Length: 474
Picture 1 (cartoon, one colour):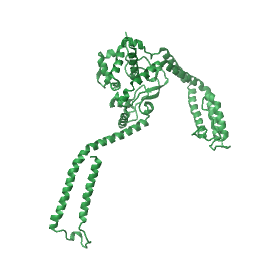
Picture 2 (tube, one colour):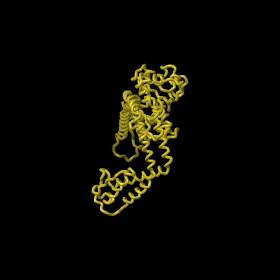
Picture 3 (cartoon, helix red, strand yellow):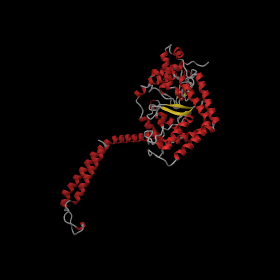
Picture 4 (cartoon, one colour):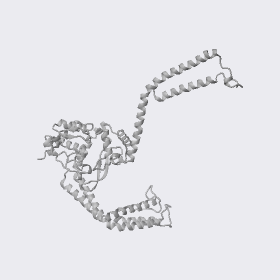
């Protein structure tokens, strides 16, 4: 029985009892007496000791019986009432967490649904602004427990775009807000079957990245050369932009004249500003306006005056940027050229490359497919922490297993840390526990996730065999 039904029954019982006693008080009252009630004759002893007493005792027995029934029933419903309250509390917490997720822009990097995304970040080795790969968090509790997730939220991840969000780490969220955010993260976790179904896609994606690496780096180089050219063009663009802002402001300030479409801009201004935008486009690369004096919305859905004001705002913003670049010309050009040299060296060294044939021969008895799958798995699930620069993009990726947030795994480290293959498998399945020893001389910090819920042991074994097959340095 639900708590609402119990409360309703109790209320009805109390109301009925109250009504009875009120009616009993008025029963038998007749004409208004000239005497005060305490001076009038009351009922006889026979009446009080028979009918009145019997009626009162009957009511008392009924009320006692009702209470005797209702108290156990209320007790039986107490557990479900408490469960309902907990459920309601969780729902409200999730709503607050969703608001925090939106307010602080978590979805801007990790995706609206937590499926992963990207963030802008200045890569420290090159000084280049890169698109940093932000991991999916709609599966995070298959790898970390609540306290480990809380750690990352409080302190963020240094040397990455992930900032600290907790007060202890210098962020804006208190403990209650972190609780709500974690509740919301739990709310949109995908099912384990859905997570397992992404394994092949993740492997193929990481292998495709290796196949197209040179092209990706060449595109980075081309963009960096464009950046250098834009810096070099800044001093010559500056006076053109300054004049453009002045001229367009003057055009938009003109008053008087025919305004056929009654959009707030005279016909002559619409023609002049359209012509002017075409003339400066070749030098500045800004928008070309094609305003029609006979149509108030030359661009569907936008008034011509709004378009013209937007064009002026674009010029003003560009002027601010160009002025900054022109003022710091040597600094910006030097940084851009340093970044280009970094990218060209990366293309020459190709540190991201791996030889499937060598790995197959040294570790998998010549099985190329196993070697490819092992590398695909490592890059998809391990490289973000254990390969330097991996999240920043191909051009910034160092040798596989070179170390980053996690330790380097090259030079036979896997065999040094774990004497037995089974011990290493167990560690990868469960992850590290803060303060708990692992391997020969490792001490867990809780930062190494467990992969037992997201990868089958056969795939974990492939990764471990690849790592244990790496040759130890001389």
